[in-house]
Length: 266
Image 1 (cartoon, one colour):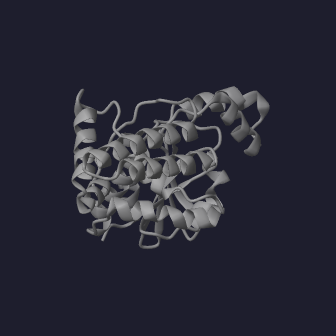
Image 2 (cartoon, rainbow, N blue to C red):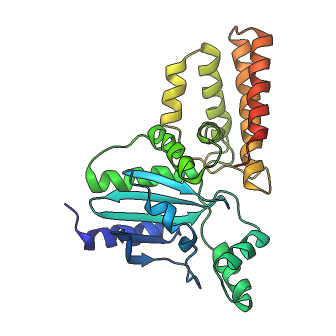
Image 3 (cartoon, one colour):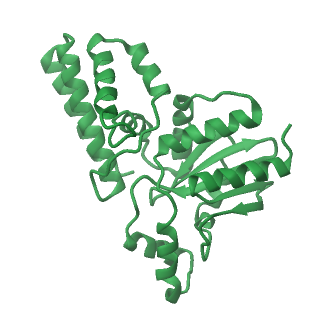
């Protein structure tokens, strides 16, 4: 069994490798903190209450600024990695955070500069890192698909609109990955499954989707999510038609999903 010193060692290296701050909590008290970025003030204080309520073995929390925190509960300890987000945050949003944190206005520019040095990490990559660390700690394997489902519990805590289905789908679309043609190949694999009507293969794909650093196709996180969802829904509906689905039904369903996506506010 890994003791507290072992957790500190793992957490330190986790932070060093990811470029994201990490904390260890026990009984709602912080016992360890490490970050490559020397922040004037830890923004975690704004989300501390909600994050500490989450007791799943592996989970994550996303706040109203689309920053997310990865969470690992091991024994009596809680490892919290974050904040990070997929799309770089604007100066205006960071100034709002400064206000909420009661940072001296004279230090706002310095804090904004510090926050921008925190590595931007796709949510799926963060989840895969958490799964790997939890396996190293406990020997228990976790499914990415199951962890995504846990987000609905967090939405209840935050009283926000459910968006777990959108989060599943946006992480299936591939942009700017390691190989120059990897995005095209992965897209074709997904569309081929849809065309064949292989539901189990699609579910398996979602559970084991590779870590992909999505390209930026919008300047704001919610618009980015919506754009990728719309592209995905469009491609999937065409693949379903090629597979034999009724054209009217496929296009109707695609339109319905896109309309629902556009109504989402978080």
